[in-house]
Image 1: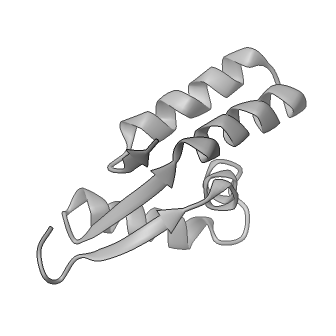
Image 2: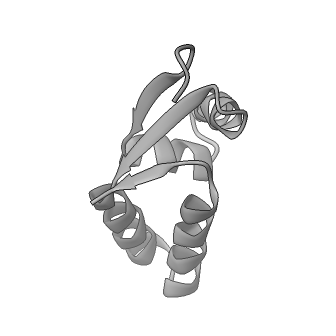
Length: 81
């Protein structure tokens, strides 16, 4: 981590805003872009992974739930167990 790097914690609401293009999606995207450039660090609780999976499973189907988890895992984040 460099001295100019900010630390963010994304909760389930941030993920759903991004995935479903809701209010706040642009802010989440901007922070992800900063993280990709090593100008920010994003922490995500394992619980957010579980909640995104569960909510998606309830509203859509298992394929979409798995796709969303793969998306989350592919981004520049640190998963906190």
